[in-house]
Length: 295
Image 1 (spheres, rainbow, N blue to C red):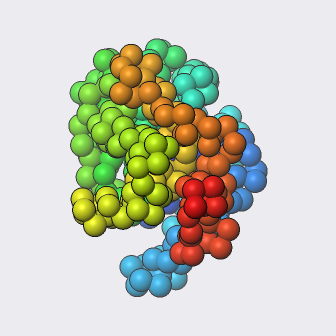
Image 2 (image 1 turned 120 degrees about the vertical axis):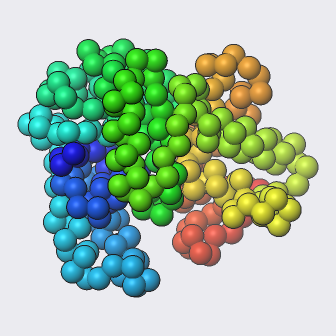
């Protein structure tokens, strides 16, 4: 594979583009928003600067990596000759189905279409195309340049050839690919999101406070960060979306989002990206403090 296109330049999309470019691939990062693309350029540059500071790459490496990422704000001709396209758009089934239908009509027959979805059925996404054998899930973890795991999800009609190609490609990125069958939430979020939901419910029922709940999980369970801060980092809207997919997919009350989570998303308290969630980030991540709402 030589030409990789990434649809969506948000946190996951720009991180995926960064990883491919760092391994020498030509990457086309596509987003309908010019503002998002401009922000992606800044984010990638800052991430590379951190790597320079840690002496993982040189200034020359940074220039080479950035030169391999091309920014466009429409799919058009930019995807036609791609060998692989990774969709990293909003976690909305309707949006993803629309994108895959359009990609299917634009791309050459050999192109593999992958989704970075964290919960939505790959088999269902594949139905929007005429190439279900070439549709697969590549669920990267955030932050993409640092986290090693990639969940590789086979849909019902994903071919073994497509699966083997993506497993090998993930290893080329210095990632650790793990095979997962298609099911709501896959493995990572099926286990993680109920834990986050339970942590929020524990707060809602006033069992303990934000800092205290996170401290219990960090010191008592050896988690690198507490579940409430992790929810803020992921984005509370994303957590809610994933829980809703699992709740509808399994029809099981244990996946039902708690009221506090739903209320916070409605109030646009989304975590780090909105500046406020369970913690207040107005003074930056390093100086976060418990939101006034929960003091």
